[in-house]
Image (cartoon, rainbow, N blue to C red; front, side, top):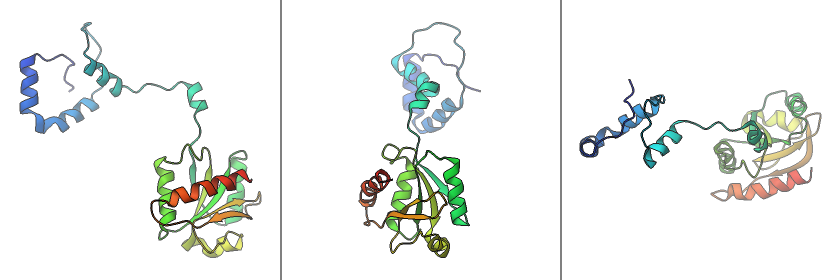
Length: 194
C-alpha cells in the first residue's frame, strides 16, 4: 500500500533524515511504484513536491510533435539469401535511406559504431537511416557472391534495387575512441552521393 502524500512536520523530517538513510533506496522504489493518489484537500505544494509529481507522471507528447521528430537509425538483422532479403527491405521502405552494414565481433571499430547506434549517439547525425546488418565471419562467402566484399570491415555499402552491391561503399576505420568520428563523415559523404 502506498503512503499518503502529506507534508511532514519538522520533527518527522529530522527523524527521516537521521534514521532512514540506509532505507532510502527501498523507500524510493516504493514511491516510484505507487500510482498518484487523488487530492482530497488543496494544500500548497512545495517546489520539491511539484518536481516529484512531474517526474512521476509522464507527460504525453502531442502527435504533431512526434511527427516532427526525426526517425532514429535502425539496425535490421540480415538474412540469407542476401540479395532477395536486401531487395525486400528496400521495397518495404522505398523512401528510407538503406545501407548494408558488414561488421565482425572481433572488429573494434565495428563494435564502437554498433554501440553508438544502439545508444542513440548517432540519432541526430543519421536520422532514419536503415542498416541491414551482417556478420562478416558468418556470411563472408554469401556476401562476396552478392558483391559485398572488401579487404576491411566495417563495410557500409549502398545496395542496388535488386539487393546486390552497387559498388559504392566505404570500409575500414581507425581503432580507439576516434573510430565513430572517423566513420561518420565518410558515411555522410557516401549517403550524399546517392
